[in-house]
Length: 102
Length: 368
Image 1 (cartoon, chains in turn cyan, blue):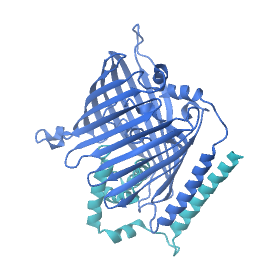
Image 2: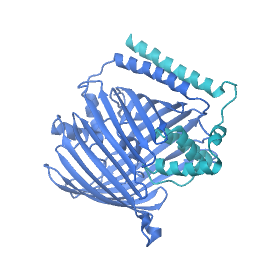
Image 3: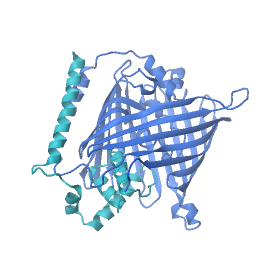
Image 4: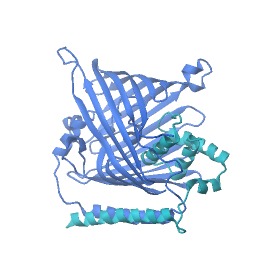
């Protein structure tokens, strides 16, 4: 009985997560949000690059020697991996990715 | 790593029914996911660059001399990163390791080649504050197991003495994420529940729940945190620990440390790696050179000496100090060497190591 409850609860969690994120991706106006737009409202390009470098050094360097830059699509994968592995914040990930793909 | 899993898991009872606290955990997951999703407004999961699948990992070969007995170690640890759409990442790491040494009476080197699945997980990035992991994952207890374990990252190649105090991999579900608390501090968290698994040697897991919370201060570049784990089988023992990581501002010095305690024992380690990039002579060579050191201590717990050895822990109270040099030939390729001394009632000994570690990164598609 308990196992069934657990399975049902797990399915409920997953389905609600997927629904929530899909609804959020569509946005209230039905358009997809773009990170570059939302971030660029806050920072201009130079400031983003500077912030990206600062966060690159403080986040990446905490565990390992700072790696060199890789092509943009590889950096996007690496940063997604590091976001999970090192629990870096969403904002830090975006700024580091911006810096590493310049 | 293998034998203590086998021993620990086989001697524990197997119950087929999950406890009510697991149901409670899942309910809290649901509530938490809903809450953070409402907090996350006007954020898309990733910038414009479309990620490409990557095969990465490490390879290395080392010679360890412990109390005069040489052991050759060759290993390759491939990591597959497979991003799917904007929200998913499938990731996996395997470990293939050969450990070779001469038999006591002399003769050619020989030994086992082990293989292990460290993690194979699906990550769902639900929103900027929450990622849901399903599958086999590295247990987030302290920082060494999850973040410092790869041979190209660790500054000294010997494992810390207290590493076996917590599960290295778990099979189950985890919620994790990070968010800025204010301009001066980021908070990160991870909570997980795992099920017992004895079906396959490479997928063994214990039934436990646990979590980790840490604060990162970007100004002083200091992270401090705490971990907790409760075993939901047999002794139902608790384990807890603390950790720090400090990238010293204005100095090329990187420090880490952990403390852990459970019924199996307790102990700590502190290490530091100093890059000689600030020296004004032989700069080309100096900026590639790193000195590393570690001090650590282990205190025996309530288990017997034999049980401790089976788990990979020292059989008695132990102190150890180690100094090493790393030379980076290029990004991701380094030559390492170290000397350490271990003090224990069971006998003092010297620990030597030398070797080479390499990190590779191969795109499985168009990278530009």
